[in-house]
Length: 320
Image 1 (spheres, rainbow, N blue to C red):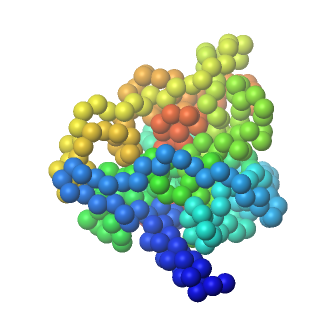
Image 2 (tube, rainbow, N blue to C red):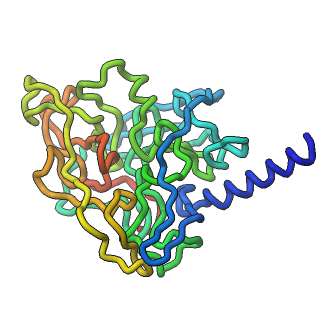
Image 3 (tube, rainbow, N blue to C red):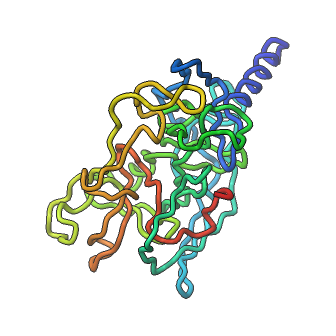
């Protein structure tokens, strides 16, 4: 390797370290953000990696039951192609995918509690769940205002960047890699969905939430408790706020609500088919007698942001 090539590789590695440092369990740092009044510089992600990398590690995933627990083991390696990760020219972020040794115990007979548990609670508190390919879904990025590192008690978690709206090195599956080597989805897992069905316009059970309730993708019966009703795209009850953010550009962001922040959206009960946690009660092909189930939607919030039941501590990310 020439001295010039070596220098280029060193500079690229250094740049990736700056742009993708770790906070809590994720590699979601954006150290190029700045704010002067309402002039906020944020790298809005308009593209994804091409998922051209074929992994040479076999997918391992198993589910068993024991007593009142659903027991899951996984190496968190997807059985589909991924983006280019690691310290290579054109890599999405500097972390290489490595095999994990993950185990999860979740409730086999989950219930709905009187209060919700949120994934974001003064920092990312939980990942949401695990798909049936053994890869976690973890929608919350660790990017509170004002997006400087390290994160301190003065950071404002009420204004956290939306992971799928900013450039944090996501591939075509809206996924990337933690510094630990764990591959995880922040949003809709496109290639996984393509791998399980050529026609996705029907109810598809795709995973288990940390509280034990099932996860479906996008579609459900038009009448929740009638499996003879037509299948339709289920809509969330969130919408983008109108007007300007109330912040001063110092303690909180200002500018027009654009969807860059999770708080740019508001939940309105009854606006769509789903509740605040992007779920509803009804029958499904796997639960003909009915259950509460979550839905990954193509519009915000995508992956749900709260639990109606008690999440397993195996999905806990931080002190929350």
